[in-house]
Length: 237
Image (cartoon, rainbow, N blue to C red; front, side, top):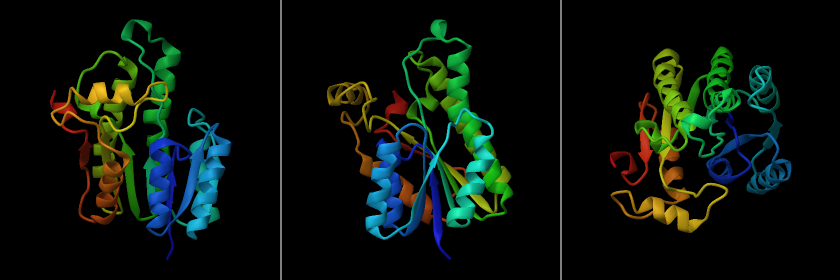
């Protein structure tokens, strides 16, 4: 039986790296993207060179009609999903006083509502497999610079734990909390190094650290409801 992974936000950054790693591990890939069409098709070409199938799924995670459609389309195209990675994310440093209803809705749509309803649609297919949610080291802290972002990632952490209890034993649900691994899209390596100076390890991690955590959660059939922090101890500060 073929293994099929759906990766949201899979065209760039961590999503791209995880999709390619999974393809090398023998998965056919459903690659979700919203606006990064050319990047998504570049990843598809790379995955097909590996010898795996790749199906690009365009959709807006703020659209409630997309969630069941996505799961249904991927299942009909590639077969039963064995791994769902809720990776798509948005980020801006917006403080509490500047956070309007649109900001609140945007962050909770992408970070909470989409993982909730994609997971629900996936579970309702009757499939057996796993869900991995990509969180943030800040989910255990109380930073205020990006207030709604942090709040939404905290909510995703709780959703991860509730789903782990609810969907077992058919579907295991775990999370990965990256720390200073990649700089934000509008920053550079200097920003990353400065952030990492405030961690116990005093240096940033790299994408391979995330891929190692992903590989562990994929292979460990008895791990459920676990949150792996790949943050150099940042959450302790």
